[in-house]
Amino acid sequence: MNTLKFNDGYKELTINGDESRVIRFNPSDFGIMDRVKAASEKLETMFDKDKKYTVEEAAELDGAIRDIINDVFASDVCTAAFGKLNCMSYAGGQPIFLNFFEAITPIIKDACLEERKKSEKRVAKYTSQIK
Image (cartoon, rainbow, N blue to C red; front, top):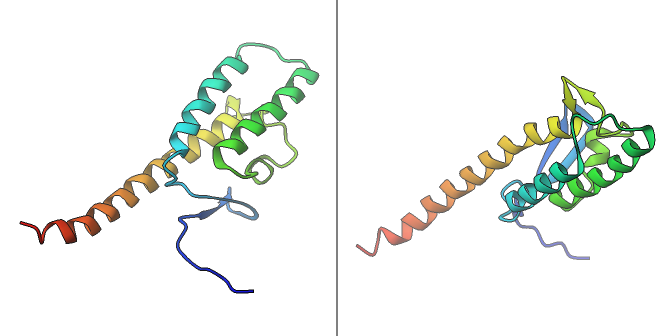
C-alpha cells in the first residue's frame, strides 16, 4: 500500500515525562480553542467544586468529563493522561482534569501563535513583491 506523507501538525506529548503515557493531537487546530471553551462551559455546569460527591456520582462524572475532554482533542487523550484514576481526583487542591487543562492550554496557545508567525512570514514573502 502506498503512503501519503505530509505535515499534519500533530504533536506528541508525554504525560509527566512518562514515555508510556503519550497523547497525540494538533495543538494548532483552528477549532481546538472553540472546543476548549465549549468544554469549559459544559464542565462548569456539571462540576461543583464545593459539592461533596458520592462514589457513584464521581464515577458517573468521570465518564462524562472524559468524554468531553476526548471530544476536545478528537481522540482518547484521557487514558494516557489519567489512566484508571478518576479524573475528578484531587491533586494540588483541585481535580486533576483541571490541572490537565491548565497545563495544556498554554501549549495550545503557543502552538497557534507559532503557526501564525510561520504563516505570516510565508505570506509576506509573496505580498512584499506586490509593492
